[in-house]
Length: 388
Image 1 (tube, helix red, strand yellow):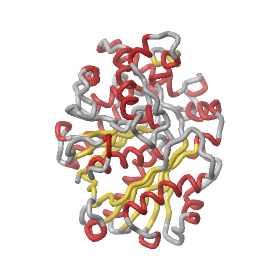
Image 2 (cartoon, rainbow, N blue to C red):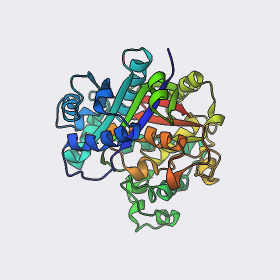
Image 3 (tube, one colour):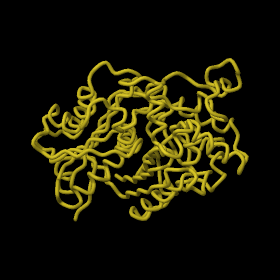
Image 4 (cartoon, helix red, strand yellow):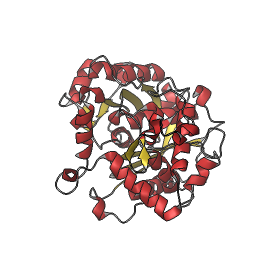
């Protein structure tokens, strides 16, 4: 079978509270991607809808979207893997096209987090852990990642200042990303001021500034066969490598707490499939739900050896002009995190980078990009490598 390409991408602005319905939210990204690909709905053979259903009031949103977007009677599929849902959706779309079952598949990720209260959202996040053995004890996402931060600090001497530098970088690019929720400047000095909101304690050592915010948003990625991509698209972006792995839901079943084993395994699979290594990645999007998550990603992806991730941010190697630019769209820390849409948004960023269409966020002449998307606390790990 031939290669598989991405021929269109779209994203809604990520916002704290979207005023419309979920079908209207999905339309925002779908319309943009269809315009980008210069397609009409009849040319979409199938769709994959991605979200975390515990946040949705609508049961089976895939059916609602297919009707609203004019995609009936083509088949639609629903995919869920927590925060990595839409990169999992991309893998399904790739498989559908690579197998020859379909020529063109739309991957649509969404989440309207504002449909439920903040306390309800936290309770549902807690249920991402084992509801028998862990979540009844009050575990929440910040607390889980705080344990990883403590382990990294104990093992390697990583400091809260290193984490603050990651948030400062995120703000540098979030300010110029029109799709981001948080576009205010964040300076290192804010983390030294005990009166500043950024220093508010969340789960030691994580502070408010170390955590991403919930958001409402949608993303859309259109995947096509090589034949269709070459016929219809002037700048196809090829899917070179896909890696996916899982880890024990219960942290008691894990033996690594300075990184995410699923991310390391998924990265190796993707590198092997693409025939490249970490040194050949020109730009990356990583799942920075917390600052420590980005730091661990540097090491899990092979951009730095274990314990050496802090040096990348201290030296600004992960800035746009650095040796390995990471999250130069502001990442989740600035864009916000509409769970089902996040992976698609990351993929969109890398596609725009490889096409040279990222505007003020553009990295110089990238040929290969990587997307690292994590579901839960390293429960699911997806790594995607794209090339022009």
